[in-house]
Image (cartoon, rainbow, N blue to C red):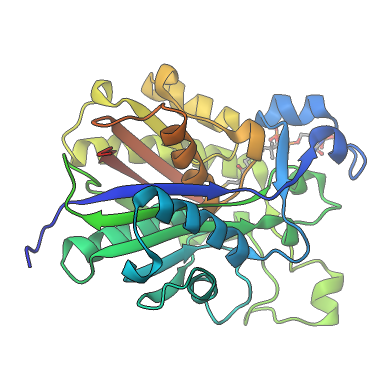
Length: 330
Ligand code: COA
């Protein structure tokens, strides 16, 4: 097979759980206000999964919509990657649970851990496998039940996150350029600025660990904010250079949906406020699902159409970050 096949996204889908938690609702949970949350983050509400919904349930719903959109049957999928930091359990992978739920019996499946950057990392991984000729069709999902991993007594974090999932189907044979060359990076020296320190092999489950709330997400918000703005801005510039595309030629920028002030700062730096996509107001930060949901919505609401150049960029715990450019082919 051709070692450099072009690869495109041929279908997208997303799913958010029914229950909506507004900023006003949060006023009854922690000491906060709609005014504080909206002015600091641009968020108005987020969706919260039901007790019996795990990451694979959300992911499977998004996947079914993406398959329908792509006109692909579940048995045509060769690979499922689920990007998540809130897996159903440590093992088996959430991707295996999604496989079972959608009946993708011919797929091999694994989870990818890059925190909020996971969906972009997974897209690039699947794209490269298709481009190399190893597989033909991949299903890439970002799915999170963040509500189980935040401390609902910590107003500095619990207001920021929501649950949801997004999915994309990738196949060889792009019209136009399809998915281009990604730029990705990581810096493990800054891991402790955004992490969940307990529950793994470093700090295993114990009564003491739970009493200390080490199994919840911890964050130094101001530091994370600064790094997110710098890394996403820098990486977009690098990805454009790598693909020899001018910022003026881009029709739509879709950044990680963590905070509208982060998005605005990147817009100002790049001078692209008129082409920047955001839905953080409705969903808050759904971690690895955020980019996937935003991409699906931008396609479905007509923001992106055939032939458009789209830049995706992400930032998350690790730290991890990345950007990619694609020409929308549908
Ligand atoms: N409601 C009301 N007050 C709150 C609050 C809340 N939900 N959360 C924090 N505060 C208070 C703090 O206690 C602090 O009070 P103090 O000055 O009396 O100590 C004050 O508000 C300012 O806190 P600070 O953390 O400095 O606010 P900030 O302007 O940096 O905004 C974030 C906080 C979290 C919104 C902001 O730092 C942020 O968005 N960071 C990036 C987070 C992120 O995107 N993470 C995921 C990346 S993938």
